[in-house]
Length: 412
Image (cartoon, rainbow, N blue to C red; front, top):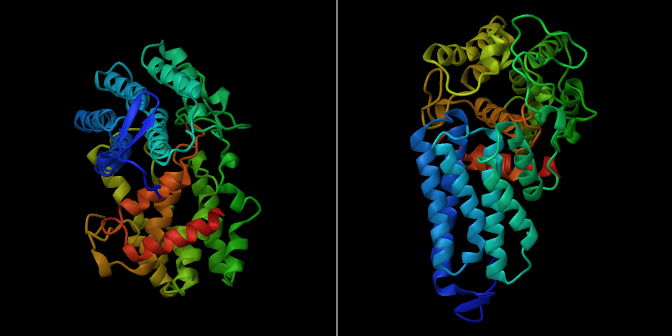
């Protein structure tokens, strides 16, 4: 919480901070920051969208102008470097990607923290030399040769987040004729190229390091009968379809079952567990080129993706025992505002299990999506914010609240 200022202005070097204007500024800053977050997420799906890029540029420009207005001009070089980078992206001098997304996201976070430090008259989280180095490296990203760009991106990320784990071998430019295959496996002609990955660095993987699917099921007293063991056996082939899916079934089980438990088991735990195991079985029938595609999907590709819940649903509906699990699988991409698929269900039309699975599935995807490219873990708080931003539209507010309680517990 902000400390109460003694005077209407506070002196900071050559700047006089106008505390009377600070409240309005901070509200505007948070709004612009949230807009940037939302646009950056959308840009990952549509990186060449001029409207999104212009919106992002305007929001960052607004933040810079407001910093000057309230007397925090000495912070603006950091924002200016981001603005210059975004301008280069807008003018097609450099392609937007997830690494650049992280640079912008983390820089905005640091800027907000620096503003808080100035208001509260506490030490800055970045030294002057770090700020100068960061501005230099961000400014160079768009100006250097493509083969040198990654060094400046790495330097920026390490300053912004010293705990960033990047693998040098994977960040080197890959020659177009150099196949990338998993360690110990030979490439096959026609395989979609995907970088070697090691997701063990992920913080939340420590939670599952020594746990198997069966361990998780047994911890919730779910009987490992013949059906369950069969469904469990299907998870490995699915995870092997894409290297960055490693461990996703265990992670999703832990979160989904913990959420259900926190809510008093509104869903039968066995039915929910089976739904988690089977919900993406339809993805295994899609071509790997589609699973690893970057950018916008064609209408045909989108329709193929939208059909994948039906595969698991049809499998489970072969047995009367798994009707509830089948409904969870069928509905796990529905959204409470009716904009989901396949049936555009709304609110209470969607079963509790599907609402739980929707959050668990999205949270895991958002917190691990970059593992196959950058080995930079999206911060937990950032991913939690994304889930919360869609409360009431994509996700049920009740289950978002349960999610918030559980994730903090799991991460601790």
